Amino acid sequence: MSYKPSGVCCRMMNFEIDSDNKLRDVEFIGGCDGNLKGISKLVEGMDAKKVSDLLIGNTCGNKCTSCPDQLAKAIAENI
Image (cartoon, rainbow, N blue to C red; front, top):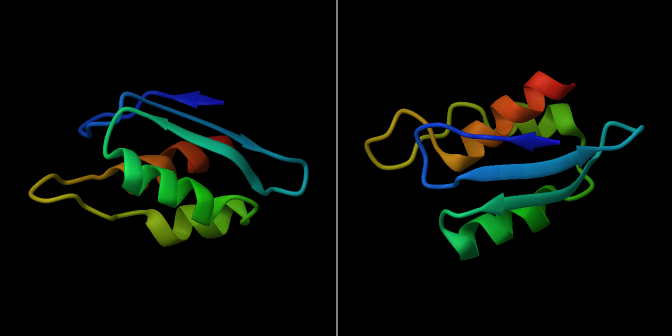
């Protein structure tokens, strides 16, 4: 699945949710490369709903959202 986030530096998010509701192949295009690669590794294989619940509402600096928050929203739209 692809998701175009808004209000963040990342330009695109790609991920899969497998038949067991686990996140796979999470990829961020643009944004803070090291941090987003770390998030991708941390959430790999986790339950999609759990990841969404954990990350929703995270903010970045003075923004009202963040890349993790946008990932949570993308997941919620696809589970």
